[in-house]
Image (cartoon, rainbow, N blue to C red):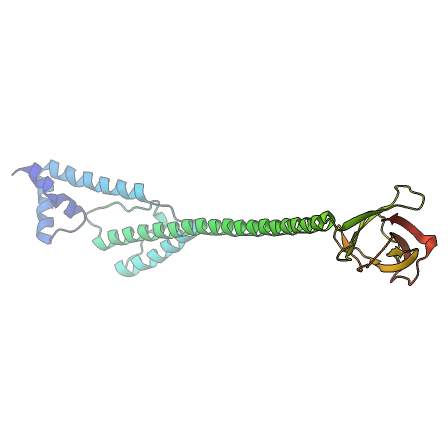
Length: 273
């Protein structure tokens, strides 16, 4: 008999995987006894198969392995009606031998696939969770950037509106200084002689004391006309009451809510057109 051809026929692999018929199994075992080459081929394939399983094995989390070992102890005990020494298992792969039923090899392979699948699921879920968190952080940063962009655009729009007002040829800027002409306080009125719109900028005016408020006046031939209370409008220019004509502008410090006539003892700044 050509022993080499017999070994290369695939019968050895089928025998190790328990895929041979009873007649084929008896034949292989007879050949193993008669020919050392066949016995060596069987042993080599068992070792090769075992090594491959060892190389592809994936360590599961400890708690999963413990639960699975306990479950297998019960399953194997019920199947064989004998107590399986599960506590003595020290490897993920069970060595193949001619006395082990095929279903146990299938069970071991299934377990390895189950544990590997569980580990991969956990691994990729962790990756997904990290990516999802990065995505949420990116969205939050994008929202913050958009908010800053919108705020800056609003500021730019406000500056453009101010420039339109003060650069209008019909607007007359009036610098208002203290009566003693010092620069301790300064405010500027912007009056449009065409539209009659009046704005004021508190360039260097301290905050009004509690219970007090600045009031703007338009002086027409020496007669004061109330132009409104100066509030903190949050803008560089504050819109005041429209004034049809004026010779000069002045600011006094009045009680909160204003006064029908200016308190000249509290005149802070004044300027002539």
